[in-house]
Amino acid sequence: MTTAIITGASRGLGRALTGGLARAGWNVIVDGRDGAALAAVGFGPGVVPVSGDVTDPAHRAALIDVADRYGGADLLVNNAGILGPSPQPRLADYPAEALREVYEVNVHAPLALTQLALPGLRKRGGAVLNLTSDAAIEAYAGWGGYGSAKAALEQLSRILAAEEPDVRVWWADPGDLRTRMHQEAFPGEDISDRPEPESVVPSFLRLLAARPESGRVRVAQW
Image (cartoon, rainbow, N blue to C red; front, side, top):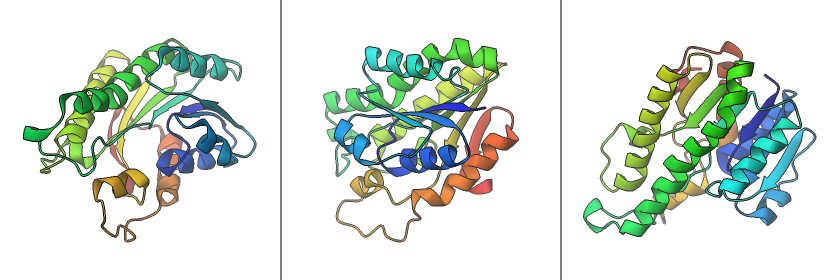
């Protein structure tokens, strides 16, 4: 595999994965909603930034088009996501429109981008890597919006894996990391004890090299 699309790469895990793949010789097409923040990262050789919102159909098509200039995507990493309101409300008080946005970004957009990428991924024996969370499988009070969206993404991933035998589909839990989203989940708390996103990049690279069967992945085990 030589060409990847990574969404949500202006910061956090997406940015760290982009650097790791680029250093390993990949062409990496990356996006982010904040064009200025994406440009400010200063990605090195092999990285092509495409600013835009992954919920925008035209932007999703643009990501595929750019990847096709480099031979087509061999790997799609659906990393872009939002937490929702911070502090996170209980489900009894969750604003309906905010929940709709959480599902639009965390569930609908990854599937829509995957649908566009699938014809090429089938031909090239590529892979889809959906970033998930332990909140998808554990009932944490206050995590109803984000957790249920990630649970939906995991079930989509399972079904996609059953339907697409020529494509590897992994849904990967990277564990708690020191990211802005994680800080938003715990406003006012010190999260400096969480590892930096760069710490899990070697595990992701080992996963890609090993190409295990489709399934749920605990990154710490690689």
